[in-house]
Length: 346
Image (cartoon, rainbow, N blue to C red):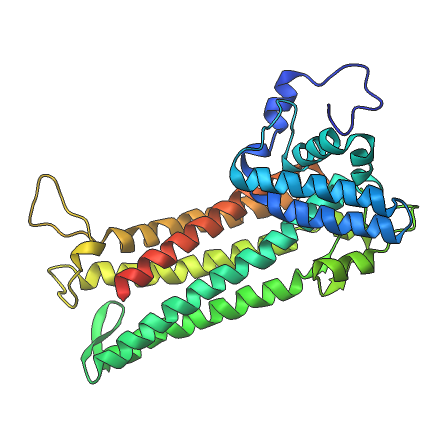
C-alpha cells in the first residue's frame, strides 16, 4: 500500500510502480532515514503528539529495522516504492497502529531532503579525508625526491627544469582547494529541512529547531518551499567532485606520459599496472587512464543534473528523484579513484 492511497479508488499500475521506483538506488539512504525518523519521533513526543510508551514502541521498531538492514535480512515488499516507504511499512507491521504515527506531521518531501543532507554531510567529509590522504602521499614523494628535477613544460614543450617536488606539490595545491570546496559545501548544506512538510510546514505544534539540533544540523530552514525543493547542495557536490575528477585526470594524463617509453620519467609498480595477453612486454597505467576517463563521467553527472533542475517550478517535483544516482555514483567512483591513485603513488 502506498503512502498516498487515500483518495484513489484503485491501486497503482505495475508500469507506474516500475517506472517510478527508486528503491534500487535510494536504499543507500536507509541509515540516514532511520536517524531522521528517530529524531522525528522524539520531536513528536516534545509536541505532545505521541506519548512515551508509543515513542518507545516506534523507536524499538526502528531499531529492529536498522538491525535487519545492517544484517541484510530485511525483506522488501513488492509495493515498496523507496527505502522510506519500506521502512515505514515495516515499522507499522512491527508496531501496529502506533507505528503508523511515525508519519505524523511529516511528508516524504522533507523526509527525503533530510536523509539526503545527512548522507552528503557524512560522505563528502569522507571524500575530503581521502583527498587529504592522497596529498600526504604526494608530499612524502616530494620530500623523498630531494633535488631530483625534470623538465617543466609549456605547450607540452620542454621549457625550464623544475624540481620533481615542486611539480608534485603543484598538484597538491589543487587538491587542497578541492578539500576546501568540499568542506565549504558541507557547511552550506548543514541546514535541516525536517518540519517543512510537503511544502508549507504543518499546523501541528512541531519544533523544526529542536529537530535540527537533535540531528546535529547547524541551522534550520527559513523557507519551507525552498527547504523541500532545494538541491543546490547536490549540484555543488557534483561540481566539487567533477573538478576534483578533472584534477585527478590531469595527474593521470601526466603519469601515463611519464611511464611511457617515450618519456621514461617513472616506472610503474607491478602491483599497480596491468599487462597484455598478446604483448607480454607491455605494462599499462590503467589506474591513471581510468582516473582520466572517469572525469568525463563526473562532468556528465553535473551537466545532466543541472539540466534536470533548470525547468522546475517551486516546490517539489518528482524530477528531483534524479538527484541520487549521479550523486551516489560520483561519490563512489571518486573514492575508488582516490584509493587507487594513492596506492599507485605511494
